[in-house]
Length: 294
Image 1: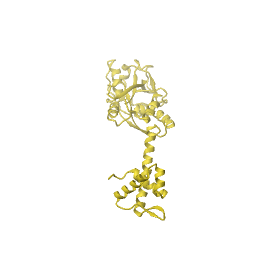
Image 2: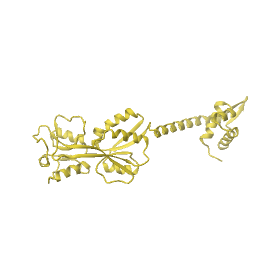
Image 3: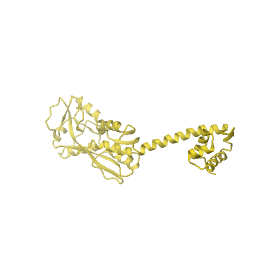
Image 4: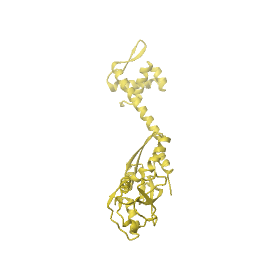
């Protein structure tokens, strides 16, 4: 015997609403014997009579009433689930998991999310602060959908990585310091420094910039939170090297931003799985590409 399923429950509810096997058959576009079979299988499965004929009309029994009430909720939940899934398939709703560094989250990502909220309000972007390596690992595992990662990166099978932005790295210096118009590794290495944590791509990038000039400075402190670093610079605790995105708001007046000599650039890329991209994820990617800068 077949297990109870939604088709049989829908038949039971329709008969109860219309009071007729024949009307239910027409409504459901089923043959009358099929309608009768559905009810017989349900009654066999339950072990009790679900419908009875009273004065020419079909009425549910007490047990039938209980099952019909639950069937209505189950059918409604099923319709809602199908509607929500269809919304996701059509790209009108859905959840997108995105990983990014604190630098990208501070300025670029909020702008992209604002546009996404206007164009696709049904898409929920869940943001996590992750290193580039962790983002790539999570993408490969399938627990992340989009990653904003520092470039270059070693290619990863089944992942697509494309250059997204190329932003200058500047020296952030307390405004009251006497400083050159263009900051060199030699001058900066002689100052108290606040640098990114040694495990970050920015730390490797700035370390190579110093090393090319024969400098290996020791920072006063290492952090992985750019806003905290800027606060320390504003307080006069030291200088730092940070990317500055075009269009980013002006910093604290206690800080001056100075170009580097030689110039240094931070490159970011967008990473995602190469196939089976859901429409909600594609909408997020499309908005992010509006902020590309090479």
